[in-house]
Length: 216
Image 1 (tube, rainbow, N blue to C red):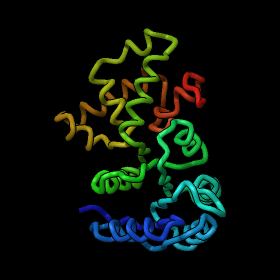
Image 2: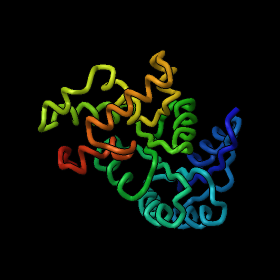
Image 3: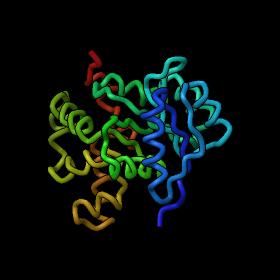
């Protein structure tokens, strides 16, 4: 059984916010402890309730979700922030990652995928939409200036690389690919060694930080 995950939800559209809260409250082990209609209100609620996860709309009038994240992340590092957005552009995702967000959720996401994303982020993962994750990984492999480095990844490692970037845990990946947990751990270690990376956040922003991806 999953442990209870406490959430704060912020969206300046009442219908969207109330619908999301109702959806979350119907899922066992998810509890909404605060609702906000502005970015500043969201920051105050997060300070008050110290939730496990804060779901923040990217576009709120007084303070955007990104601006709120910029305040929350350094002050309350144990609170995992997920950005809610309609934007699929890479620039928005990388900005969210840069200011401290751990998840990037496209509105219209399926409920089961949303619940899984919340749990993955609560466990320390980074979540981004599969479509965006696949595009970033493919872009990374295509633009790698040292072909031998990208070519050193086996097809299985490329597959696991994509799943790690999506925020799946080792156990989730093992179940998805019908592999043992130890096999997944071994592949994961080799991927990080071959790409000279050390964590999941580094995996998804590696190409950006090395100037291999462009935000224009």
